[in-house]
Amino acid sequence: MTNEEIIERIDRSIAEEFEIDPEEMKPEKTLFQDLGLDSLDIVDLVIVLETAFRFKIREEEGIRKIRTLGDIHAFVILKKNELESLPR
Amino acid sequence: MPLKRVVITGMGALSPFGRGIDTMMDALLRGESGVRILPGLADIRGIRTRVAALVPGIDAGEIPRKYRRSMSAMSVFAALAAGDAIAQAGLSGDLVRGGRLGVSIGSTIGSPNTTQAFFDDFRSDNSVERMKSGVFFHIMNHSCAANVVHMLGITGRTVAPSAACSTGSLAVGYGAEMISAGKQDMMVCGGADEFHPLTAATFDIMNAASTRFNDSPASTPRPFDRDRDGVVCAEGSGILVLEALDSALRRNAEILAEITGFASTSDPESIANPNAGNIAHCMRQALQDAGIGAEGIDYVNAHATGTELGDIAESEAIHSVFGNRISTSSLKGNLGHAMAASGALEMAASVEMIRREFLLPTHNLANVDPLCASVAHVREVTRRRIDTVMKNNFALGGVNSSLIIRRFRQ
Image 1 (spheres, chains in turn cyan, brown):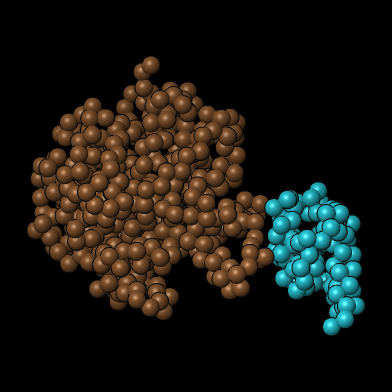
Image 2: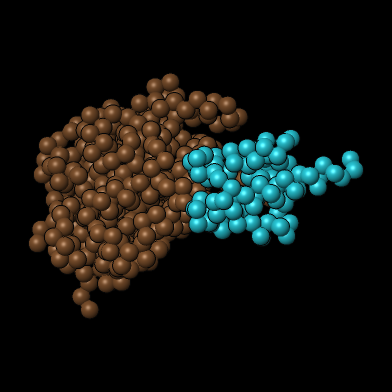
């Protein structure tokens, strides 16, 4: 999966779950202020990402630092790369 | 401190006929049935009833996602009905948010559909890792009340009575008592429920669900009829805005009717079977609460669900209180039994009967059961001015409720 495909899947999954206009899905957008999410939504956001990418991230320290959609892109790409570099 | 008079200033309905009081009343006047064949029931082993009365064509999308995420269908019904009732009452945003408006809305249980979805997923691999944040808010017992509070921005009291089929009536009665006691000026009151096969099965396993009219759904349920064979489950929400008379007059609000009496009694004889003596006692207490005698009631809007025992017990009870000349009908022949919503939906229809000056008949009452014949059944739409209605509801669990509604006069 390329980084572009990862970003496309993230944006599509989040837009669908939270009923956000796809045009709004820009990396610089903040989750709370710009996209209108709140703390309950973040609980569901983790599940959306875990379902979309078949990994477990709820306990990851990096999640707490996420502020923007771009942060999610970077976090997921990093996580996917980590998992793919592990011996199978 | 003298008790305050309580009036109704707004009503909302999500019924098997759709959204709105007028929609419901038009269908009732035309003698329509909201009961349909529900194909999915045929796929469930052991269930014999195949019919239900569901709310058609509701678009929950008008509710912003922020509020909708915590709502199952029953809360969507309640929220839309409450919004409509508050709009009719003409309550300003300041009044809604001001702390003098409370909520008294209940359901039979929390969302059975979300509960099933959760346990289906949970039991698939013994994991809660996919549990979304909204699950609890769908299945908590005060889900409907809480969702109405949040969507409308209400800051007064929240209560969520739950007593199966008496829920809607109890919610209205307790709301009226809070206003009467001066604890709140206004209360948004009523009940809501969503259909799930669990509800139909509950009656079916007790041989109290209709099963003989699966191919002719409009012919069932048949309250008081010789050929009745049980309950048809429905869904929806009925909501009333109750208000202290002084508050309504101060606002120059249109007053739809007055609530003058309420009683609720518990029946320890049986957790499932109604008892005529206890029902009669409940009705007498409501009369006492209103300070009137039996002659002060013009019409009884019965609970009568179409079960063999329940309709007989209620007929006997009505007869023992009012004699054999009291006009009586049940709206469940049209609406089915919307459980927690039924009391408030039927109360709204009763208010409209007072206002529009006609009586609605019991749909599907073709041949009165001799054991139910001791009251004056309304058999057709009857143009008549009535001033007072007794509204009955009785619940599994042994909870009876009777409310008295009167045409408003100063």
